[in-house]
Image (cartoon, rainbow over the protein chains, first blue to last red):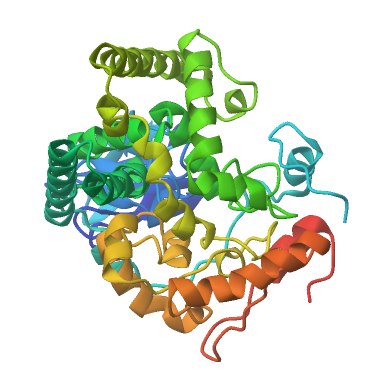
Length: 103
Length: 359
């Protein structure tokens, strides 16, 4: 059953950046967009299970640090080879300076 | 150790997967996230400037060579054009394949397509091949881009100084792909949904080469072939000279790029042709850093890396004896000392995978 999890404070993530969040054996990536919105995807690249936490956020794209594959982190859509499989995404809401994700 | 099997379908490939050497975690020098973000930041201007210089020089050299044809005075201009076509395009293929050279995606893609054509490397196939090279750098049976091999394939390297094997294989593969088929080895690392793209590019290229050949025959002139196709042969020497130094003589089947990759200080002309890939340990550790920021990355992490070779000549003085020794004893490799400031080699990573005690 889906539940809302308190993942981090809004200030924990710099603008146009991401952080890693591990919960219950699953790893997530939480993003703060250039226009101060928050998003959440699976934390591992769908190409070869590399963690996206060391990747580069450019506007609404996260680039994998290993092979430069790109995803739109708002939708999880794979945008550039070698990634072909979309990332899973999760609903996010912000409450009282905290980022909550629904898992 | 048993003789190495470099086939992607062979025994070493299976063993790498079974032992965990394939798609493993690699050692990285620690860099604060803030610094890494700054280094990874994309910009268009350095690559636009370099690309204008590159294509401008190619146009001038080719125009002068054609104007002077058939005099022998044209030869140096063809050779200069050839190096830019058959060697500089190798590094452009590489950097634009990573998508790091330019900030604007279409610029990366455009230069990538042109460079892939010049190097006779199918842009779809080789994107996947290079991804594997970064996942499994010099892991025998997994890395499709191992140049030196063990024992060293010296005749192969020598032939490739003139582009012979690489280009012939590229053209052979182009015709195979144009017929709608893939080689079984390339099919191991290219996802099925990408196969039609491989075929489409091969067919376009076949048409271009056919048109070039036809124009040479119709005009009874070598010029079309000296302009398109043959520079891949007579201009290949520089990218082979610099490319061999990337990994030759060093360890294989390890999970620390400091053990299997080499950084070499080079002259400015070679660095322009090679687009700074002489900082090769740095590139493998952090492939998201654009070529024009690699010197800064090098300064930031050199305390953790083996001493770079001071020149191309010095690097060959190190590599050549190692290759000669590997001809007799293929398990030999160079294990360079780390500075006192470096963290020790992470030999435990591959030792664990191979089930052998670390040194």
